[in-house]
Length: 90
Image: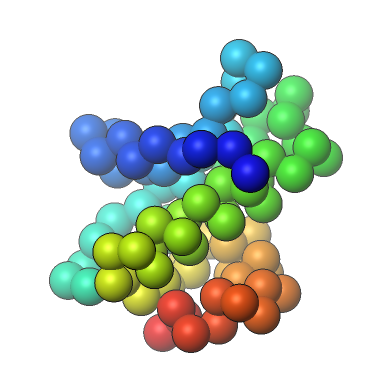
């Protein structure tokens, strides 16, 4: 899995691969991490980059004691399929 970066200035998590960046916009509401939008540039689509980004986000949420609220359709679908992340959902 690739390393993600929390770009707090932009309120987004980022994953850079092959010079291209996939990202997930977020906002915090107390102890809830709201995932607003997940984007992968065309060069990274189909490579698993967005899934790796989501894995990194859920690892971050678990490590920091946050719950996850997926607003983005992709994030919601990914979390629904991820049995190991069900305990993070609100």
